[in-house]
Structure formats: C-alpha cells, structure tokens
Length: 323
Ligand code: ACO
Image (cartoon, rainbow, N blue to C red):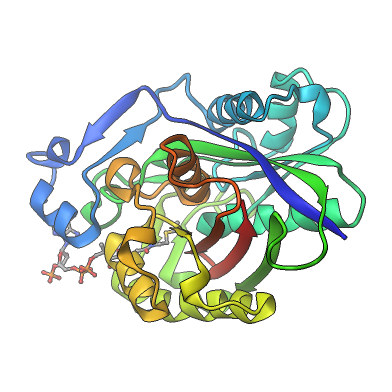
C-alpha cells in the first residue's frame, strides 16, 4: 500500500522582525493587549525584494537540503498561498523555475489559512494515485501586503513567511504504525464569507484589496469546526487523542489553540506553538511550526503528528500522519 511519507522540512522568514511595541504610538493598541488576546509577541514582515515566490523558494531549498535531495528528485510542487506574486502564472510555477526545474508540474492551491492542510491532502492523493513520486508541498504568504495598517483589529495579527515539506511515496502495511499520511479530512462552507475576506479582487474591483475580519465571529466558530474535523481523522485512523505525540495547529490565536487542545483532550506539552514568534502567517503557519519542532528535536521519526487549520471561506481541515 502506497503511503506519502515526509522526507524533509524547511522554512524561511523575512529579514525584518516587527515587535508588538512598534504598533504603540501609531495605533491605539499595546504589546499587552496583543499578547494577552492572541499570544503574539512579534511577526516577520517582508521587504519589497522578499515575495511569496522568494520565501517559498528558500523554504523549498531548505526542505530539499534537509531531505538530502535536489530539485531533480521532485516531480510535483503544490504551493498553498492566497498572496501569489502575480495573478498568473501560478507562483508554484515561478518557484519551479527558480529551482531550475523544467520537468514535472506545479500549481497553486488557495484555501487561505487551511491552504497547507489542503495542499498536503492533495499531494498525498497525487502520490497514492501514482501521478507523483516525490512532491514539494509549500505554504508561503506575504499577508502584510493585504493588511490595512490603520486597522488595529487586523493588522496586529498577521505576518509573512514560508514553510515546506518533501512528501514521497513509501510502502506500508496499511496500519497506523506505518510512516506517512494516515488520515485527512477537509471542509468548507461559503456562507461565512463576510466574516473573513479580502475586499478586492481581479474580477470585482480590479484591486488587491484589504483583509476584513469579524474576529469575534471567527473565534466563535473556530473551536467547534477544528475539533469536528480532527475527530473525523481520529475515527478514520481508529485512534484517540491520547495516541497523538504532537499537535501542530494553525497559528492564529493561542486562545483558540488552547481551547481546541483542551476540548480534544490533548495535553498542553504536546502542542507546538509558534504564534508568539510568527503571528498568523496563513498557509505558512503549519509548515513553519512543523519545521521549528523538527529542527529543535521535538518531532522525531515514528511520532504521530496531527496538523489542523481553519481560515477564510470558511475552510478547515486536519491531517494525521506518522512522521
Ligand atoms: N488593540 C487594542 N484593542 C483592540 C485591538 C487592538 N489591536 N483590536 C481590537 N480591539 C478592541 C476592540 O475594538 C474591542 O473594543 P470595544 O469593546 O470597545 O468594541 C475590544 O478590543 C474587544 O474586541 P474583540 O474583537 O471582542 O476582542 P477578542 O477578544 O475577540 O480578540 C481577536 C480579537 C484577537 C481578533 C480574536 O477575536 C481572534 O483571534 N479571532 C479569531 C481570528 C482568527 O482565528 N483568524 C483565523 C483565520 S485567519 C485567516 O484565515 C486568514
């Protein structure tokens, strides 16, 4: 039975760190308010020469180095992003070119903050379906370009960055002891559009637009949606929360993460938190957090790892994998 196994991880952040205190004086906000309500202490903000493609390329190169591979070994790139370099071609194709790859195929996937979970699920389906042997799955975003920097209710929450994994076809017996993607569940429901969206677009205003969010409304739905979709992966795989070694959630708000872990019965010490360092980097947040926890030695081969995300749309999803 073919399983999609993680072979390497990598990440990339813009050069510039922006601490909460930098908002003070410009906006009616404070380090204390931001840290208490969200857990965020700082975020990274891309300079003009740092783009979704350049950050994605750097994360991809780091993941390839970590895997001991070169672009020649890759036949598929799936990039999760809502902040592409251009309307078209897909930024995944630009990253393919930057990597010097002229074989295989590449495309973008847009599910906002759930993008990486959607992209892993998609790459896994291509691998199990025989269309790819080894895929780069990247989440890269420059959300700073979508923010209204005068709106304190949104601009303090987001940051820029990229993370990537290499997924490759491996064999397994079909048990939960096998390495690789074990279960996945995806959901979306467009009736929630007004709660989190960008008020511009090619086919409507012809502008990029700004991110708009009813934060309290998003918060209200988040925990229930997240825990439902995670429980769907638990029942697919026949496991319980106690079997999880590491929970790597989308990093939007520490209070949402804590409430979700508590509702599921996942112990606090098993939860990977990077929202304090990176803010909400949308589709990049899960692979960034993964790569931090792999690099510092927490996530090891054989661990049962749970990924989860929820975002604009709404979209939401979870992936369960044996590292
Ligand atoms: N500094 C100071 N005060 C602020 C700030 C700020 N940066 N932002 C809002 N406030 C004020 C509000 O105006 C409000 O004032 P009022 O009571 O006078 O009206 C007060 O603080 C409380 O506002 P709430 O919105 O109720 O605060 P809440 O505790 O809900 O925290 C937050 C807001 C952090 C946005 C929270 O609701 C949240 O995290 N929501 C979920 C966001 C999320 O998870 N998004 C994920 C998806 S992102 C994606 O898909 C792209």
